[in-house]
Image (tube, rainbow, N blue to C red):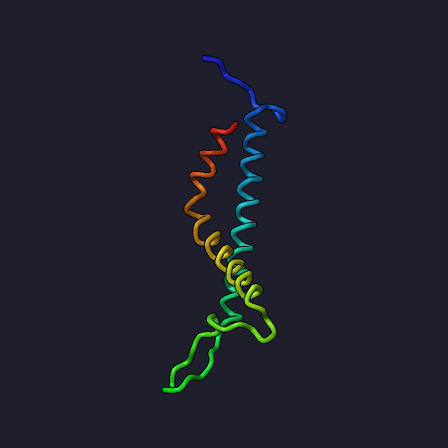
Length: 103
């Protein structure tokens, strides 16, 4: 049985460092998407009073001065941020496996 020494330039050390930076980057993306989801959710709070005593959610309304294209783009941005925030934690094991296999 041979023992190998791990030096600062060894491939195992570089792999661990790259793995750590990958995790830090994904954590940053996750935190950013959670913050964006929270912001978009808070911006649609409230509602418009409707006949019959119920309130229509503002998520179905365009903002004043906003075109339909801008409204669609805002919806897609909100949807992408929400999906990344929800799916990234469960996709981490697969992403790490893919990263190890790609080396």
